[in-house]
Length: 133
Image (cartoon, rainbow, N blue to C red; front, side):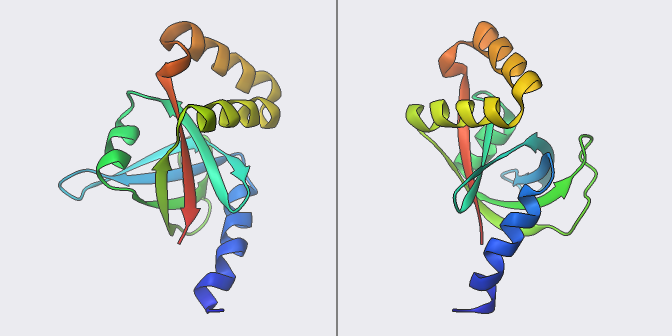
């Protein structure tokens, strides 16, 4: 096993330790766009749930490589960033991540999920699975 492969679980644990992770996506011209998000652990990956029409979803559709860093609620990094790969999940993945969000963030998560469902409908959100490279 390579050093990079051995360090991926350690990096994932480090990223999962806090409440937020900074997901940096790339615009078509290569400029970066950092966004702080709630995340949940999904086995060997992190799960993110967001509005289907958000800019990060559009950018991930065009280019799945991302940078990940632990951060505070305002998006200030609290540790080094690592490269990762993001993929948009199907309806079942979205349902599963909604349940994980509700479990990890019991009060605020449920309120945000309810507000999203009322405002955008069930199909107005998308789950994003992010793996550490």
